[in-house]
Length: 180
Ligand code: IMP
Ligand code: MG
Image (cartoon, rainbow, N blue to C red):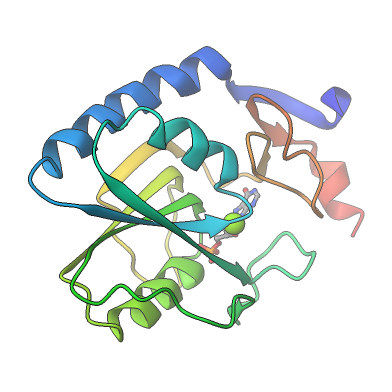
């Protein structure tokens, strides 16, 4: 698996240091409110587990599961909700947690869907944000790291459902992407 990664961008200690900082900001911003976290599966699994354990506030956790890649490395634009029920977030202060912001399709669709349930507020937190022109505009409130427009894997992020268990985040070798 390691040989498939061209270069490591963020190792485990670097990720954890950044999570300490983001968790501190979120804990300060939400100190008077009860947070409802909506985790976007499966990519955000490691991120959510490590981040939430650093936030010493009462909070609720719900998950949504969507697909927009269909095994390819580029977003199709069509976002399919795999969880049939949308979490009931009426009147709640919602924080959406996702692994990576790329084209913006996924987070824009999730945000729109959750807004129909009339939450009190919605904010977005992503571990990674690709610096690029997006198909849909999404302005995350908390960002772990800004990265170039490259395909990355590890720490929850997959390519064809593999590499999620790598403890670091790295750029996948281009030949592997081209093999599909
Ligand atoms: P968007 O809808 O294009 O913003 O894509 C968001 C989703 O696509 C993320 O939640 C990831 O699951 C996936 N994704 C986008 N870029 C990458 C990447 O570089 N590596 C792995 N997954 C990615
Ligand atoms: Mg994902």
